Image (cartoon, rainbow, N blue to C red; front, top):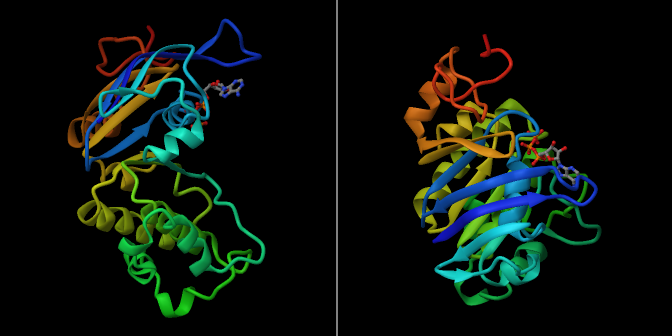
Length: 250
Ligand SMILES: Nc1ncnc2c1ncn2[C@@H]1O[C@H](COP(=O)(O)OP(=O)(O)OP(=O)(O)O)[C@@H](O)[C@H]1O
């Protein structure tokens, strides 16, 4: 469905330094992918490349076989690629129901905003008329943002560290929410996360380090590698399995 072919990225101001190097990835319909790996490994940059925030320096991006490499964020959104922020934006003077109606505006007859709230674990009666402002907790805001992503009926939705800024209790609920939407919606979900609980939701886990894919496989294989102390997450193959870093050398 979405395919990255030999995608590389150099950022202005870091000219000559590739922050993504020769990435080859295929994302299939209705699957959950979790992208994980050490800080600075390139996960958010990969998300931004998929979204169209950045265009690759070289390589190709295909959606359903059509090249979208040069399309910007708005054009990709029109084709069904969407993004949820690390810290969701809050809007002054807008109610939850208005935000969801706006998100569903291209498809108003097929989206029931009460069902959407239910799907993300919020009671419509309690939340439809709440203001989208600081009165909502981090966990509530995150759920409402996920509801807006669902309302858009996307082909592929990218969530960058959805666990950021929410407490443990809300986090458990958030993981359940992803599980529920995976069974009910066809949207392919790409989640950037460091959390084992989120990785457990994945069909496939993608490990990134030093701007490359150091491993990609079905969940249990990769999780076993990550949870094994001997495994590391760097790009160069070594005797310890997944890769090699400073601690592995020697
Ligand atoms: N706009 C930019 N300008 C310069 N360097 C950048 C830019 N965006 C990312 N980088 C660099 O690219 C590398 C990868 O960053 P990225 O944010 O993709 O990593 P990450 O894996 O998401 O990290 P984290 O887990 O800390 O969020 C880092 O070294 C970062 O400093």
